[in-house]
Length: 181
Image (tube, rainbow, N blue to C red; front, side, top):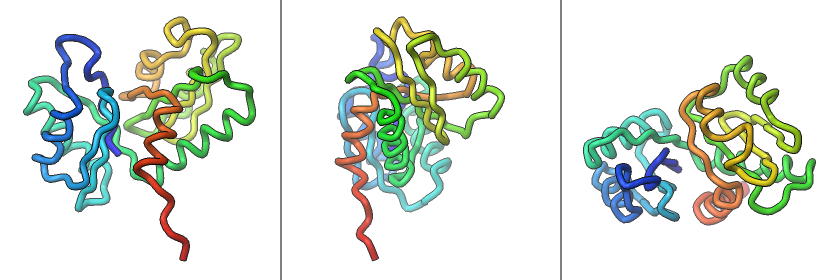
């Protein structure tokens, strides 16, 4: 799964979902599908190296759009693990609908920076880092939260944010559990 950062947020970074799919397919990927206009792209690649997939997608998107489009690539198993961790996080704390966001990171986070991020949460907020996923449990509004996507990126590197509901939907649609045996 490829998660594009900062597309369709303003007039200068337009990248409609249909164009995302077309450019991805033209770059040689199979099984391409998109979900919403926020840059959620299913891809099948000959390589199993997420960094290679990321590199190829970023090159193709930049060539087509004329601006850099950072990409976070999560293999299906990793996306399923992000969702499973999110279910555990929500079970440990009552989280109202729409208040669970997840920042997906390109790289594993530095432990010291991770601790700084967790400590930055305001009262009523919680930050839980599991691998390359930062679960943000926020108070009244994402836009008023002390820990948001911008702070995650400043401390932990390139990231892109999705609601937990969107990630759950994507895992259900695109990442079914492999058959047992």
